[in-house]
Amino acid sequence: MKRSEEVKKNKEGCLLISWRNLPCGAILTDTKKIRENKTGAWRSYRPIYDEKKCIQCLSCWIYCPDSSIIVKDGKVVGINYDYCKGCGICASVCPKKVQAIKMEKEKK
Image (cartoon, rainbow, N blue to C red; front, side):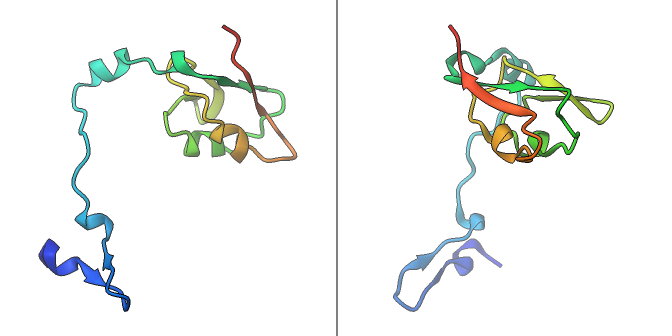
């Protein structure tokens, strides 16, 4: 099926565009440059990980958009602050009864 055939209109006549019609975004191939681009410097809030409370559900690791949750041998062991932007997703997906990750204002 051609891309032009995938574009359809709804009953109001508006175009319905699927992910297949979207143009490609930036593709980063130089992994050395990616590692050098530390993005954690402009963080406003930082996640604080409490190892004693963690039940190792790995939800924070699954949802972290920056791959900043450090996992070794299948267990969360910390947070890589060089790349954590402080979005707080890890804290929001941490089970409420556990709260092993809490956000606090960044100290600079």
